[in-house]
Image 1: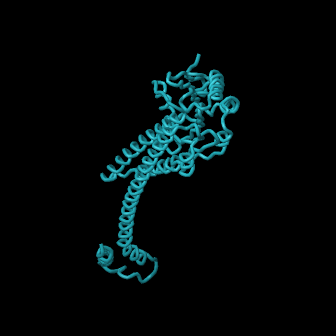
Image 2 (image 1 turned 45 degrees about the vertical axis):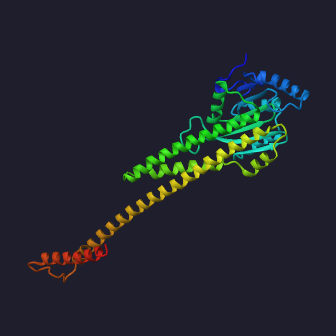
Image 3 (image 1 turned 90 degrees about the horizontal axis):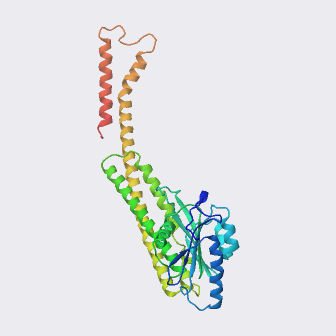
Length: 347
């Protein structure tokens, strides 16, 4: 019996499959496991060979979602999924920039997403690898990610996909929605820090702004799609990709551009707040330095006279004078008042 897998250890079955779905043409969605996926893939490819002119969406297609932390996942994909070698090279190359490329008759996508338990830390970002052809979508990740979980939830609640490219487009829209939520969360935190700054309660706000700025910089660097690869794909998509799917994919990339512009605006806002906080800190430091300088200047006369009169030699003036102490005090006060006047006259 097919199940939505949530097994021991890795959250996947013995092959590393987290969940599998068959999207039947016009007749709903069916759950499958890794064993059922092998037979269904064989039948779908046989049907495609018998009627190769049927457009995308005319046949059923399969979505398989894998956990790459499971040691058997990559081995199962290499043995049963029939994926392009480019997909496995992309897994191993270590380049995590967001992109969608054409690899022969399939699409290879690398998408960066935030962890399911995202806590606004730059380290809470991981990569999702995707292979898309006419009859199969494979998604693979090492950490639980929000966008893919949202897509799984939507499919569980009956959302039907017309084609494999529509599933990819829905995933990118789900990621854009997650990013919009992150931008709103960062904006709320910046608003709170700005209010506290205006109220004069600095505390450790500068460090918090630094964390948020690093998060936005990393998100922008990883999530901005490579324009050259995307342009080549939209200009020359595979033959099985429908024109409607190309237009929707183009619209989803435009949503990314809007979110990325919002991120750039937030970075500029954080930069201005950091400069304002740094200016306030410098002003406080200058004020403290001025006070220290004034105290040093005011204490200079008494230190000099104390050093002179404290020398244990003969001929100390006023040593035998009846009012010698008060005369020295008067001299010290006079020099102190003169030093204070010199220090404060420009102030």
